[in-house]
Length: 167
Image 1 (cartoon, rainbow, N blue to C red):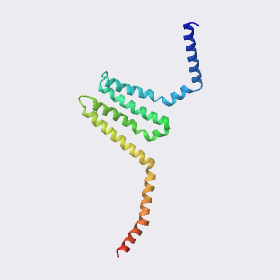
Image 2: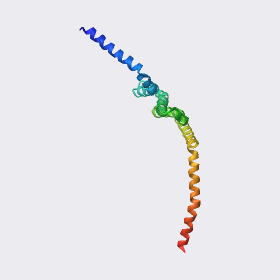
Image 3: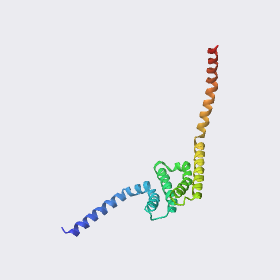
C-alpha cells in the first residue's frame, strides 16, 4: 500500500465520520448550544489584543460588551430563553462594563467614561431591582402580611404575658 493511498483512506474515514455525526445531529446540537461562543470569542480576542499591546484601550468597550452579552446568551441558551425577561438589564450593564474597562485601562483615565459606566451600572441595578420586585414582589407582600398578622395575633399576647409576670 502506498503512502498516498493510506492518506486518502484516512481522509475518507474522517469525512465519513464527520458526515455520519452531522446526520445524527451532533453538529447542530453543538451549534445550537454553544453558538454564544461566536459572540464571546471576539470579546475575549479584543481583550487579548489590548493586553498584547496591539489595540488601543478603546477596544475594551466592545470587548466588555460582547463578553457580557455572550454570558447572558449562554445562560439563556442553557436555562431557557424565558430568563431573558428578567436578564435584559444586563444589556445595559454590558455597556457599563465596556466603559469601565476603558476607564480603568486607558492611561488618561477619561472621567466621562467612568461617570457613564457608573450611571449605566446604577440604571441596570435599578432595572434588575424592579424586575425582581415585579416577579417576586407578590411574595414579599405576602410575607409582610403574614409577619404583620402574626405579630398582631401573637406579639400582643406575648406582650400581655410579659406584663403579667412583672406584677
